[in-house]
Each structure stands twice: as structure tokens, then as C-alpha cells.
Length: 454
Image (cartoon, rainbow, N blue to C red; front, side):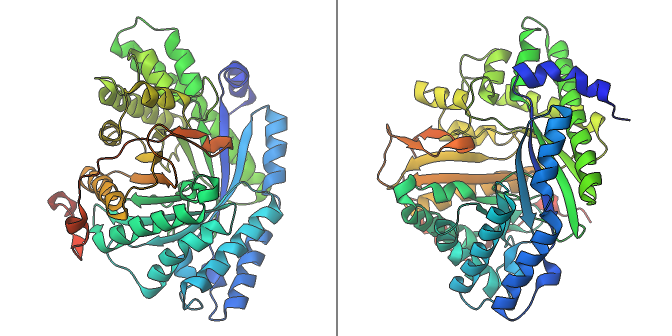
């Protein structure tokens, strides 16, 4: 049983080591909102979300004050909109009206982000899927809080290369439409392989069709806590190092379990999962890269980085699983560039490249995340980067993702400013040798042989 003494143990973590509950995310099914009339569909969506989430922010704030635990974000995820809008939306412009409904509803409720402007196209695409994907540039350039995710691949189905090619073009157009703000629209757009149904973290959150009508998922983050714990065992062997990470992850996850259960009870919505992800922020001391340096690397990206990250990720998961019966989402270490000052320092020092980050994504929670690249990068090159990352996820049976930002008007040596939790990022160089003939082939890369396990 979780008790207040366990919470008291974390006081120093909260006050000095940047421990926080990064998000309480309410997942909401919109399947019962479907209507062939677009106006009625938008009305149904607003009413359903409002009725279930009207107290989400208030309850999150109350729990934070009562328990002394910072709860940074309150968010909503919904059923992939391509499934909800298919009957009513006959064009990309129709889908964009739903994005604006979601945005207005999020603003009315006071949440930070709303995710689920999504499509699941790992094997093929319906006309609704294509219309939603083509609507993304308009949707993200005319909203503030809407996040979009497209699942392009899975271990069971392979990689939808037609969708990979299209997403390279969509990312470029989204960047162009938001160029006045360093192409920030792309920071709310992620493409995924093996997307989980219960991820509370944006931009990849959506409410899976296997989920209940509504659910509470909590994401906990504590890179600073782990770094501080490791600083006390600096000269220890690997056994003690791993035990320290596991014990720390256990304590952090228990905090998330407490918050999740409280939020579930007060909102009368079932508890789903705790996602223990070491999700950094631009704040000093809240960095995954700093953990890797504490383990013994001069910079993230130095030889040994992938091994150190693999160890960190595995021990975090082991500690979390012991602390809660319902650990889910992504759970592990995120390695975004713009949101992690240590990663930014490593890029600026020349220690970290996109190719090294790609290698690290084989063992981290997600993938190539919040990476700013030159605005002149071709759509086919972006699609090539996506295809590589989807292949890693497909073959390794893990979630991988790409969230790259081709910053219009900027090049290597420049800096992009996104603000808030999104931080800032140096523009990273990209391999510009051509891959267009490969990307322009039609069809699907088949699933790997080891996917056949029935």
C-alpha cells in the first residue's frame, strides 16, 4: 500500500533534484461521438471532452498542493481523429475544423496539450487517413495545443513507405507554415513505429481503441533525482550502479502511483498506467545527458554512450515494474535535444551527431526527438531519416519515433528557440546524399521474419 511516509521520503528529491509528475493525462474515447454531419461531430467532441475533463486541471492542482508534489502538466488524449472523422470529413479542410475544436476545448479547460490528432497507417491508409495527414500543416499552424502523431510502422505489419514519403512532405509544409516561430509546428508532430495505446507524453499521446471510455495515465520524470543518486556512488562497480538506479526508479514510480490513484478516485475515472520516463527539461540539473556524464562519459555521444544508455534504460524499467503493477506507456529514458541542456552542450561540443543519436535510439525509450535540422533539408531526406528509425523499431520490436524540425531560414550554426518545456536547439547537420529514388518506390517494407509468432 502506498502511504504518506513514502511520499515524505521524496521531499529532498522534489525540493533539490527536480522530481516532478510531468503529466496527468486523461485519455478519452470519442467513438460514441461519430456522426456523418461535421457540425454535429464537432459539437459531440467538445461536449464529451468537456463533460469528462472539466475538473482535470483543478484536481491536478489540488493534489499537487496537498501532497507537495509538482504536477507540471494536465493533458488530454483522444481516439485517433482519423477514425472519428471518417464519416463526416471529405477533405483535409474538414479535418482541420476538428483540430480547431480540440484546441478551443483544450483552452477552455486549461490543459497544456491535447493529443490524438492521429492516424494509424502502419499497413495501409484509408481516404480518411490520407485526408487527416494532408490536413496536418493547416491543423498545427492554426492551433496552439493540438499534437499530432502518425503510426507508420510496426513489427507485425512492416513499414508503410507510401506514408513515410508523404510525412516527409507534410513535415516540410508544416515547417513552412510556422516559419515565423522557428517552424514550431513540427515540435507538435511525431511519427512512430509500434505506438503504445497508453502513452501520456506528447506529442505521441492518443487514446487507443483497446482502452476504456476514459482513463487516467500519469507520467513521472526524474533525471535530476537519478543523477543525484549516482553522484553518491561515483566510484562504485556496475552492480552498485544498477542497484542505485533501480532503487531510485522504484521511489519515483511510487510517487506516480500515488498521484494516479488519487486523480483516478477524485475524477471517477479508472487508473490506467504510470509511465516512468526520464523526460528532461531545459532546466539545469534535469538532464539525461548529465546522467550519462555522471556514469563516466565526458559528453553524451562519446564512445560507450549507447552501452551506458542501455543500462540506464533497463534499470529504470526494472525499478518501475517493482513499484507498480501497471507500468506502461514508454517508460525509460528520453533523449530529446532541444529539451535537454546536456544534449545541447554535447551537440555544440561536436560529441553528438544525428547518426550517434540514431544508434542510441536502439536502446532508449523513443527515438530521434526534438532535433532541429536545416530548413533547406529535402522532404525525401526527412523521409529517409524516418524510414531508418522505423526500421530500428520494427526489427527490434520496440517503440521508435522521429520528431525533427526543419527550421525554415536557418542552417547549421544557428539556433532555434521554441520556449517553455520545448526549449531551444542548435541546428544539426544532416547527411544530404540523395535517397529520393529509394523513398519514391511505392508500397510497404514487409514485416521481419521474427514477427511471425502466432
